[in-house]
Image (spheres, rainbow, N blue to C red):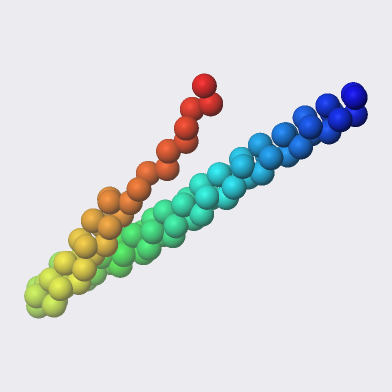
Amino acid sequence: MKETKALRKVKKLTSRLTERMEEIRDLMDDMEIEFEMLQKQITVLEKHSSEKTTASSSPSNEESEDPEMKEEDEEELDLENTTSVFVKPKF
């Protein structure tokens, strides 16, 4: 009798752990996606800041930067519209 009760408890525990591991995998996937987006945004901002310094030295480059700036703004909007990760409270 004790062995069957212990076995049921262990099975219940393993099912809970399996569910938790799936939740954590999903959270990690979301975090990896957001991290990649942040890295991409950093490279865009670095590129933009380096182009700004070169543009200030030569005014003719400002006209060619406008399409690139629009693309960067669109990427920034994508970053702002990402879903946030929500963890349900335990209680």
